[in-house]
Structures are given as structure tokens and as C-alpha cells.
Length: 266
Image (tube, rainbow, N blue to C red; front, side, top):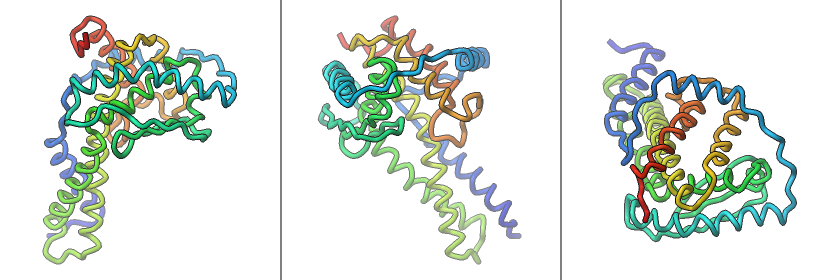
């Protein structure tokens, strides 16, 4: 018997999630966080107070940008040469874009865009460095290529499962919808793992570049304060880990790196 449309949708999402979860891998998988550490991060988000950053001039924004890139690049390149997932030139084309939004992104072949609004909203170069190193890490870990592949795999899985769920009388629109759901689930399922991995790589690059990790952590706290869902525990349908999780992982990974248990570059 064919299921109702509502049940079809739930079944597609559930089965696609199981299929994609079984395929999802990253090189440095993180352990599950205990509730106590999540709770500590939630308290930190609530209690952290920020000084409102003063508006920076165009020249000051450019100086922040240039200084951070100059300090990060040598260690990011060295890290890339040792730990990159695939052979690639360990250099980046990083562009400063005049845009008031608090954002940055990685794309293409080692290309990164940093918005001026992000630089204007941080208090220190260390905060900016965390974001830039995070975007570098997406390239080092081959996340850009993996993301495209995961969407395609998800679409194929969704279409295949859709044909089974809807039966032999399935309309092409139903199969296309199933493929779209699979692509969405595939993208979300992998991107959370990728974001955790990029945070981890970023910490190692910052540490060896001599940036202040206490100040760098303020980037995540600031993002949590900007988020309307900053207290959310679950992150299943988010493209990024929930804010408390990212902050708790930051502390755990920092200890491993500072103790020389991960990513030795010397």
C-alpha cells in the first residue's frame, strides 16, 4: 500500500539520513560531548559581556585584513603541506569585500572572501584570524569538493529511495522531490562534521601562528550572541554545529593542541 504524502516525506528524510550518516566521514572525527560541557558553554554564552567594537575606518579594516593574512599564511601553508586531504597548491587568494554583513566564505580553488562587516564587528585581530584560518581549513580538508559530492550522492539516494517509497506509479515530480530532499539531507549531514573539522584545523593554525586563543574564542561567543537560537542543544538540521557545541569543542581541542597531542608543525 502506498503511504500518504506526509508519511512519505517523513520516511524519505529518515531513510536518507540513515544512508548518508553511514557514509559520512571526516579525518578527525570528534567525540560526543557530555551534557556538563554543553551546559558550561551555554552559561558562558549567557554571561559573556562584550564591549561594542568601535567603527573602523576603511584604512583600519584593510590593516586588520593585511596583518592577519601575513601572519597566518606561512603556518597555514605548512599545515596544508603536512595535513591536506588531497594534493593541492597550499596558497590562497583571499579577497576583502566591502559588505556590512558579518560573514566570510570559502569557494572554488583556494579562494576566500572576507566581508568588511566582519572585520568591523570584531575587537581584535585574533578574532579575525580564527575566521580566516577556519575558511583556509575548509580548503585544506577538501570540504568544497566533498560538499558538491555529498549533494550529488544525496540526490541519487533520495531518488532511489523515493522510487521505493512511492511505488511503481510514482510521478516524476515525486521522484524529483525525493532527490531534492536527499540532496538537502546530504549537504546538512556532512557540513556539521566539516565545520567541526575546520574549527579544529583553525585552532592548530592559530596556535602555531602565535595568535591569542582566548581572544579568538570570542568569535564563537560573538556569533552565539548574534544567533536567535543560541541556547539550542540539537543541531541536526543546521548547516553548522550549535553554538554551545562549537564552544565546548573549542576548549577540548585547544587542550589537545597546546599539549602537543595534535598537529605538531615543528
